[in-house]
Length: 297
Image (cartoon, rainbow, N blue to C red):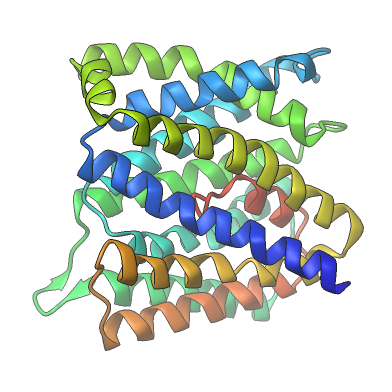
């Protein structure tokens, strides 16, 4: 990998990490409802990528299902998790998407898992458990439950996406946006009264965060990452994206003042080593999974 491409990847990971912090601030500090935030975000994505929507990939039902899983499911659950979960803890727990994807690949795609990838799965799960542990036992805050659910929906969407051929990055973003706007908007109207007023109260900073999340993260950063995957082996690029959770943890401690102690450090180390082992093994859906994380991702 050239120095230029490595610099692009570092920038992409930094953008993804910043988006985790920004999303936390939007829903937890500014009080913008998470479903409303996700709906408006995907409305912008859908509008910008509309020229790439057609012709529809075949079968259409599958791309719609993938769009709902990776959009309305993955990101809405992630934003709901950020209401109560810290970015640092979320950055570790969301790594469960990697073993989830490996297991689903076995079940749906018939991939084989040998002992090294099995070890990676075990380490990642152990690391997540250590992060979620407290002196009174294993407990998940409501926010971390949403993060786990987000990891699973993104993983299932990535595996299903592997069964569709010929979908380009911007077309993928177009379908994620187009399929997610209406269900998120309806859910927000039903469960989040006053969402628009809270967003207007947040003012220009919210608009800036929204445009950053929709345009810089979804359109530019994801497209740049996909270009790197096309130019380099996934086994080279995928492990380097572990910079995203590390950057998220660092920014979380500095910006949102996340608690980070030795227990979380140990859990983070175990989880990321496990992800690294899995990523270094050949995996058909790993690039697609990492493309969907804004890891939040």
